[in-house]
Length: 232
Image (tube, rainbow, N blue to C red; front, top):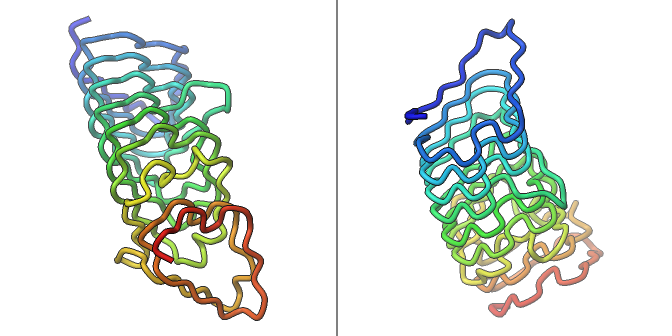
């Protein structure tokens, strides 16, 4: 009670176990910094209503519901080694963090967990790494305010992403958002000769796309790959 800043920075030789819901509902916590190889358990900071800033530095593992209902959370920074975990039937890690406006995924991320940003209605800006392969169920459900998605890979890599369902797509509610690939908004997609398949829902609801060009002799376009691409 009375704490405003929590800093976890233990020697590497220590074995530290934090129990589930360890700080849940604490209104005094304003910021959290975690350094090193540490696991934040399920619902660790659930409902910390005044938590505004989180810094994750090192090989930190974050479990389901860790920051769910942290309604004042505005800033989250993650080092490349951070690992986010969740389950389909669990609270999302940042679910209902309605003050969160931007998020940059750790550079080694391969999958966005289920329900991760569900209900983050003011999320405006996303940075997704080239290492990403899968966006899991409901990852961006009810994220109605996304304006900019910055992708670190190529348009060929984007075409191979796996979207578990419609609510996993960051453009699901935001067809007029900018998808930035190669440093500029994507309006023309030219796919290399190695691209023989455009995965399901890859360009779902992306209305700024005006032209597509295939260079492979045969390309399979899967279901809803260009659904609602009204600019084509």
